[in-house]
Structure formats: C-alpha cells, structure tokens
Length: 437
Ligand code: SF4
Ligand code: SF4
View 1 (cartoon, helix red, strand yellow):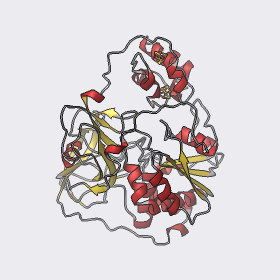
View 2 (cartoon, helix red, strand yellow):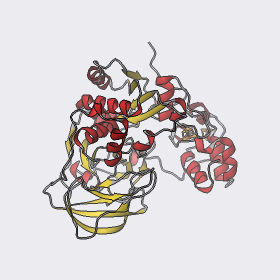
View 3 (spheres, protein in one colour):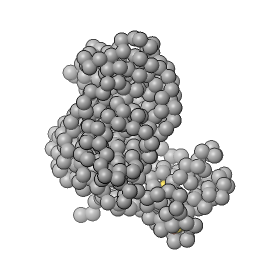
View 4 (spheres, protein in one colour):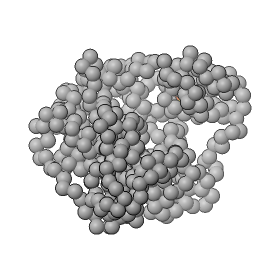
C-alpha cells in the first residue's frame, strides 16, 4: 500500500544514523545562561527582573501583554548578572537576560493538575500561554495563537508533526521512542483546548519503531490516528503534512492551516504542553540533536534554554577533524552559526557540525540554465528559477508575481539546482526588500 505524501520533494541522504541510537541525556549544568527576550515570532518580552536579583528556575524573567508573544522563564536558579544586547544564533544583537547559575536548581512552586482533561478550554489555553510554549520544530510561533482561531475558521483536526524530515535531526524521533504516552496526552490536551474530535500523528516511515511506539501509546484512543508517511523532504512542512494526512490544500497567497480547519503542532511541543498543563512546568529546556560528521560524539541532549552552543559542543566531545561549518537546525532549513558563544533557544532543534567535504560553498554559482528541475521538485508549485533570476537582477517587486511570499524557504529547489544557485538566499533578499500583498 502506498504511503501518504505530497507532490514534489526530494530525497536527500538522511544521515540520521549518526545520532538516532543516542538516548536523550541531560546536558551538564552551564555556569551561566543567556535568555533572549525574543525567542519567538511576535512581540519581544520586556525584562521583569533587575541586575543583581536572585531568581529561581521557572520564574518569569520576561513578558509582555502582546497577543502574539510568549513569556520567557529562568532555566536555572541564580543571580541576574547582566541585562543587555547579546548575539543570538543568527548573529543579531537581541535584548537578553544573563543569569549566573548557582547550581542549586531551586524552582518556583509549580501547580500540578492531575485531572487536567477536565479543565475548560480557556484554562488550558491560559496554562499553555503562561508556560511560554512555542512551536519547537524550529518556527517558534507562539502556540496560544494557534489555539485562538477566529470564529469563522473552525478547527476540526489537529495534526502532530513527527515527520522530522530534516537530515541529521533525531530529537523528535527519540522523544517518540522514549515518551510516547506523554506526547499523546499533549495531543489530547490540544484537542480539548480546541474542542476537536480528530487527532492525527504523522511520522516518516524511516522511523518504523517510532510509528509502532506511538501507535501503542494511542491504542486506547479511538479518535487519534498514527500514520506512516513516505520518506521525502519536506514532508514535515505544515502544508505538505496537511495535504498528505488530511487531503486538504492550504490556499496559496498567504493561506494558513486554519483556513482548512487544521492546526499542526510538533511532537516536542505536545510534550511541552503536557508538562505545562499537568505539572505547571514552563518551557525552560528542550531536546537538541548535536550531530554531523564534524562532531566527535553525536547525541541528543536535554538542554537548559540559554546554554551556549560551545557548552553543547564540549558535551559532545568537541569538533573533530576539519570541522568547518556549524548550523542551527538541519542543513536544509537551518542557518550558519559563526560563534560558539550564542545561546540555545526554544526553537533550537539541532546543531549540525560539518567538515569541508559536506559543505556546499555559497558564492560559486552559475547562471540559470533553465533546466526546470527546481520547478519539478518545489512542493509549493512555484517557479524558483524566476524568483532567483528576478531577485539577482534586483527587481524584487516582480518576484511577487511569482508568489514570492508562498515560498517557505525549504531549500528543495537549491538542492537539485545543477548551477548551484543560492535560490533561498535570493528569495530571502527579495522578501527583505518588499512587503507581502
Ligand atoms: S525554497 Fe521556496 S521556491 Fe524553493 S522549493 Fe522550497 S518553497 Fe519552492
Ligand atoms: S534548477 Fe537551477 S539551473 Fe535549473 S531552472 Fe532551476 S534555477 Fe535554473
């Protein structure tokens, strides 16, 4: 029987063998954490602490009243030693709070709720908001926004994304093997919060043991279906997942999953939601895959938010051989990191360290030869060659005639381009020079 999937896509080497057998282990306590006040899409938080103040783990250190935002919490106990601009993984200076870790791991009092499924939708949503939950697949979109759709867009299906189609990354895979029951509980909380009767969990079929574990965990739930998906990049993109599992097409030109009655959440986010609602635990740590041919001991670590990249690299034996490039996220949608002194945030799914042989150097590209390979594989049905040609020529407004803003920068087109054109970089450049609409 053929597996669910979408039109287009590619099959890059998945490289998951480097870290897939590494169980999740806690990273050692860092001496200090740098907590950015903006780790999410939306309004940055305002600092709620002062320099010199003692804080406990789980304490709110940044918040705002803005709807599209998420509070940030101390991930360790200790003393606030600085508040100011510090570089994030993208190299931007962002307002951040620096906490010196006293290594006592003292927590604020957390409120447990044993009968969480009897809470109202409003109470569940409030707990998820208070815990600062954001999408942990990399997008870092505040979860509470997805739980508050407008009345004219009713949701009837929630899809949990366990595809993890990015090469090298195995954190979601390990969570599905190690904590499947809690992930299912997180899905049930989401379904109750949205009043939805149908839940689906999509997992690429290169993880048959994860499919089996999730099926077992959901076996008592008649309204939750666990589905194996064809192994194809970018199967884990929201629109592709909805197409494959629900058979619905999110409209182009700015359409959202809620336009077709669906909300998508990552499996790691579902686990964080369960911990927030059941135990009152805010989002202060996450699983990070550290992998790549350029790291000595690839693994999956449970990491305090704000821990430096350098600390994690040391935990994994440090770079080896001719390691030349470091990525936050996977090689398809991740971005290069130029300093080890930047923090892990809520959206950091992985660190990939690559040697020279694995790096495709930007800059050495050729003119488009109009082979149309990029068109054949684009999952959005776009014309990537036109986007790159127009952006290269500096006529950014004209890119909009080719649905520039429907491109979600998956890198599929660039992967197959024989001229090695940096199509995604051209797309980003055009987006930065124009406005949607
Ligand atoms: S990066 Fe954009 S244009 Fe290229 S394949 Fe992905 S969606 Fe299509
Ligand atoms: S794959 Fe590259 S060379 Fe071929 S049409 Fe697309 S941009 Fe041009």
